[in-house]
Image 1 (tube, rainbow, N blue to C red):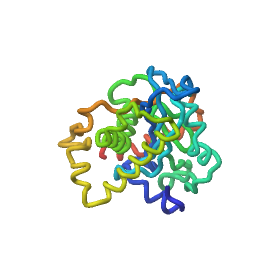
Image 2: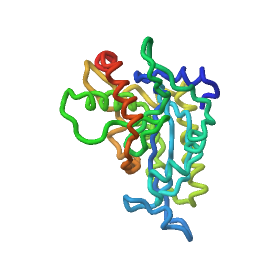
Image 3: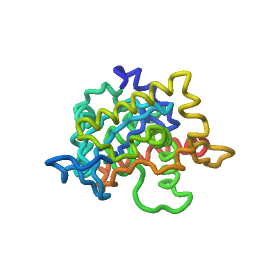
Image 4: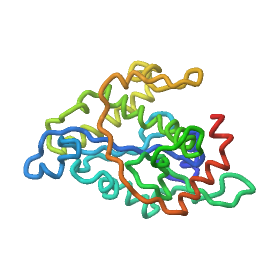
Length: 257
């Protein structure tokens, strides 16, 4: 992860104001662990550990943590993670909230783009819940939010597609399995930055926009890793106002990008 304010602001290239990365989590299947199997038995009916990641706009993993017990509620997995501790205690040196542009004065935090498995906080923005009519600001916001999260969805999809061990079940105890999972993440980043990138992840691997239409990447032809479960969490009014402010202040940007 970046170590300075400037390093974080350089990550703000996801075509979404103040977004510094996209966060996601997936269940990775393992065999039933000895003596503590129920702790790892998840809501989908299989044993798993959870991989939490943050991905940048270039489909590289900025952060990865594996080993969370699949039987814990997905919201609890994040709350018990090292990443959550550092975010809550402001240990990651993320820049302070600031206005999106002059002359507006409402401070908007820098944040990660999360889906409905993550609560809406000062460091993680999630889409509007519920169904919204076409053309509504909530629906447009959610569309832009989803587009900006494409790198994390694609990075995890390509990871699972290229490293078949992640299809599982991994026939090892959790403490060993987590190292296998993290090794695939390190190899992904290494290969993405090497001369083997076009073999590892050719352009057809990725979701892409062609003439305004979404063309799905090749990784979607295979069964992806299991998502974390959505959580219900009331969004504080203060954060709701920030989300609405972001849309109305940047609605031209949202429609054009």
